[in-house]
Image (cartoon, rainbow, N blue to C red; front, side, top):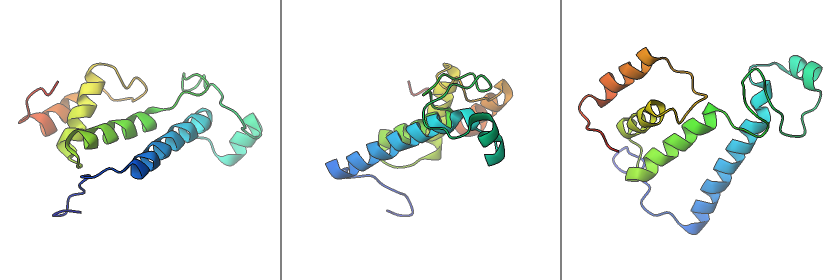
Length: 130
């Protein structure tokens, strides 16, 4: 921490490997749990038994092995941090708006009004960054 801000100034190879491993674990776990998202244990056991492989989800309209918006949001967060080597809510929101405007987070359900509010409240003083 530097002045209350988390700063990523030196990324060693070991730290980078841990970072990549954490994101792979996130994406794999998200994809494995995707078909049962929102279900309790009893419902999962009744419908699927034990899950040992990637499965599709008609409910979520995702294919087997596909991760959800949760992983996409984590990738957006990591990308925004890597851009300036620290966390900035403005940069994160700016990156989210960029992705949402272009339909690059297709499984994130956000209405047009919410997107416009994000733009107005967080980005009014910022110029287009891409």
